Length: 316
Image 1 (spheres, rainbow, N blue to C red):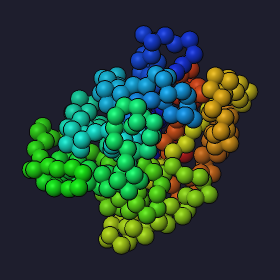
Image 2: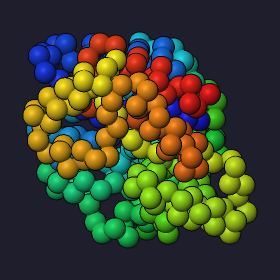
Image 3: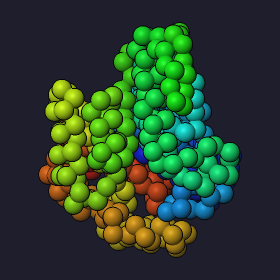
Image 4: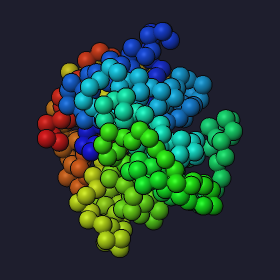
C-alpha cells in the first residue's frame, strides 16, 4: 500500500531537451526507489494542469510511461494518481493495469477517480457530462475493472457500460491495490469504503479530520473494517540541503510558472529539518502517509533522494 509515494506531475524542466526528457523522469523514479519511497506515480492527463503550467506543455500518456519505468525500477509500486475514468473503457483499463502488473513483476497499482479537467475532455473529444454522470460512470467502471482484476468474469448491463463475462487472461501476478483519489465525503469516500484499498485525500489540512470521520462512517454502514484502508494525503514539497537553496529553487520555479503561485502557502519549502518537521505535524492528523510531488526541483539530481531520506523515517 502507498505509505510514501513520489508523484511526477510535470515534464517541463529548464535546459532539458525533448530527447533528454524520459531520462530525467527515469532519474527521479530511480532516486525515489533508493531513498525510501514505496510507490512512483504519474498523472493521468493529456494536457498540463493550470496550476502547473500551460495546456500545451509536455505531458506523457501515463500507462505507457509507467510500463517504461517498470523496466528501470525493481521494487517501487507503479500507479497513476489518478486515472481519469472518463478517458478509458473499463475493460480496456483492466487489461492495461494487468499488463502493467505483469511487465513490472507484480508492482502494478490502480489509482482511479471520476475525472474533472473539462478543457481536456472538450479539446480531445472525451464526453465530460455532469458531476453525477461522472460518478455514476466511476461506480459502474469499478464493478467491471475489479471483477476482471480478480478473475470473476464480471457482467454488467449498466447505464454507461456493458460487459458480458469479461475475461482477463493472463491475470495479474498478485492482488492489484486500488486507490481512489479525491475527498468528496458523500460519493468518493463511500466508494473508497465499498471498493478500494487506499484513499488518496486531496483537501486542506483543516478538513482531514472530517474526511476521516466520513470514511469511517461509510465503513460502518457497509460493514467494512476501516483499518483495512490506507489513507494518504496529497502534498507538494521543495526540499534542498539548505533553506536558502530550497527557497531559491522554489522562487525560480514560480518565475518560470507564475500560475503556481496560487499554491504558495500549501507547498512545504525548506531544508530537511524544516520539511521533516512539517510532515511530522501532518502525520498527527490521522493520515497513514503521503503522496508527494516536487514540481519545482524534482528534476535536479539528488533532490528526490533528499526528499525520500527526509520523509521515509517518519513513515517507518
